[in-house]
Length: 486
Image (cartoon, rainbow, N blue to C red; front, side, top):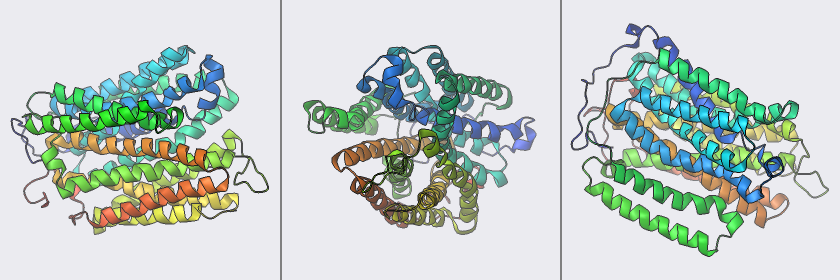
C-alpha cells in the first residue's frame, strides 16, 4: 500500500488518541479476541460433522462438501472488500455487519436441516473472515501505544486458536447432543458479540476518503471464485476435467483484467503498485505459505489419528472425539506463544520472530514425518508446529504496520488474511489429492513433506524481508521514517 492513494484523505488528523480517555476501552481487546476465535471456529466447526451430513440432510457427499467450500469462498471474497469498506465508512460498522451475518447464518443452521438452507447459511458465516483484519485496525486506533504490539499479535493468532479449537468443540457437542446444538451455541455467542461491539467499541473517526471501487470488487470476487471453486472441487471433479481447467484459465484471465483495471482506477480496491513493494509483498507471500503449512498440521494429523490401526498402516484408530482432543495443544501453544512472539518482536524485531516461527514449522513437520511414532510423539509434533504457526501469525500484521498508512490498515490486513485463507484452501486440495493418490503411510508422510517444503519457503522468504525497527507497532501510523525502501 502506498503512503496515500490518489484522491484519498483522512477525515481526522492522524495523531493517536490514547484509549484511557474512552470509558469502555478496556473491553475492546477482549471483544475482538473472542470475535477472532468465533470466526475461526465457524470456519472449522463443520469439519467433524461433514461425514455425517449427507445422512442427516438427505443430500449427496458432493452437495455436503459445499458446506465447507461456500464458507471459504465467501470468506476469501469479503475479506479485502470489508477491509476497504471499513477504512472508508467505519471499522465498527463493518465489524457489526460481519458479526450479524455470522449470527444469522448460525441461527439458520440451528433451525434447518435442508441442504440448500445450510449452504446459504454457511455462506453468511463466511463474512466472519473480515473480523481479524478489521479488529487489527481497531486495536491500532484505540489502544495505548504500549499495548498495541501484544494485542495485535494475540488477535492475529486467534485465527489459529479458533481453527484448532473448532474441531474438538464440535466433536464434544455432537458426542453428547444433537448437531444443531453446535449452532445454537454459536448463535448465542454471536448475539453477545454484536451487542458488546455496539455498546463497548467506539467508532474510529480515522477514515480514508474516495469512492468505493465497485467494479474492482466484482472483478476480484469473480477471479477468486473462478480460482477457488476448482481448487476445492478438483479432487471430486478431476483435476484434468474440462470444468476445472476452464475455470482455472478463466481465473487467470480475470486476474489479469482486474489488475489492469486496478492500475487505472483512481480509488482502487487494492493499491497494486504499493503491494508489489518488497516490504509489503513478502509478508503477503509469507501469509500464503504459512496458511498452507498451518492447516496441514491439523488436517493431515486428524485423518491419521482416525485412520484404522493395521499391521502396515499409519493410523491410530482414535474416535472423532479422541482425535479432536489431541488437537488441544495447538490451541494452548497458539495462545501462549503469540505473546512470546510479541516479546521477541519488541526486543529483536518482527523479522527475527518470523524466522523463529519458520524454524518451528520445519522442526514440527520433521517430527511429523517420522513413522511409527507413539501417540505422544504425534501430539508433540502438533504442538511444535503450532508454536511455529503462532510466532508467524502473531508477526504478520507487525510486518505491515510500519509500511502501511493508518488509513489503509484494514484493507492491507484484509489482503493478508485473504492470502492466509487461500493457503488453507490450497492445502486442503493438495492434501486430499495426495492422500487419494498414495494409500497407507506413504500418503501421510508425503503430505507432511509438502508442508515441510512450504515451511522452508517461509524461512527463505522471511530472510528477504527488510529489517524493521523494534516495537514499531506501538507508533501511531506509518510515516516517512517508517516506510522502508522496496
